[in-house]
Length: 103
Image (cartoon, rainbow, N blue to C red; front, side):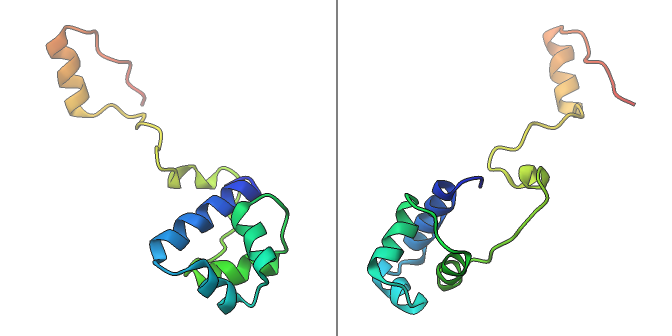
């Protein structure tokens, strides 16, 4: 996640998965209606303490990673670089030349 909009989208997804109402999360986090609405819409900046309170009430933790480390957590990870035996057999069966091997 790289933006406030991304964070807010994830909070909305988690709220839906949780089966809780926005009001119950807002009250548990001790937030005003306007502040909670701003967080969930992602239209304005909010304090870290507000994010932590909402995330906690939704069963989420804030995790900071070095840039680039989250690529392995992506929903659509890049295909493997190493050719599998199945890939090699398919290429041979199709008459394609073998892919260069990395040693």
